Amino acid sequence: MKEWLGLLARLVVGGVWIVAGALKFPDPAASVRAVRAYDLLPPSIEPTVGHLLPVLEVVVGAMLVFGLLTRTAGAVSALLCVAFIIGISSAWARGLEIDCGCFGGGGLEEGASSKYPWEIARDVALLAASLFLVWVGRTRIAVDNLLFRPVPEGP
Image (cartoon, rainbow, N blue to C red; front, top):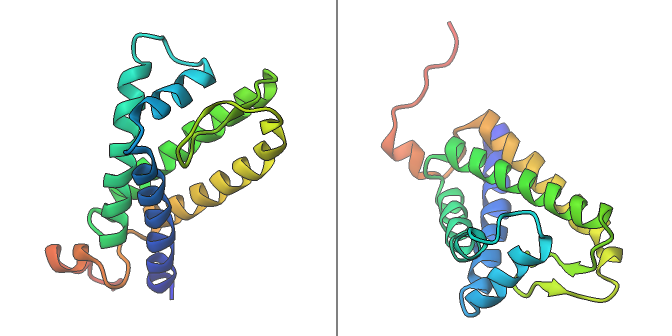
């Protein structure tokens, strides 16, 4: 049963990452603006993070959807979720009114803090699903099952 739940978690989390990253590709400047709006990183690395983050999201999402190196992709996904939870929580605590930039956009947005609880809850759910994938490792209908020998069951 856990392998089927893992498949569902892979498809949902992977799909979210692919959509989030793909929506940022057409406007890389907006992605950089979103990173800058959090005011957490040194200005010298904000452009790099803003440009690389969508690529990382799409790659991790594709790995999850295809079931390729699921544990590793799940761990990277979990780290991204933790980073986003910290970022949104930090913005909220500092009274910033910014669009999270999770699905494109970003920057100042009047009344954005009213969305922060939902955004944090969403990221916590994605974190839980990512950690489940790290724990389960192998799932149904995955490239991992073609590339790696099955792990023998107990004695």
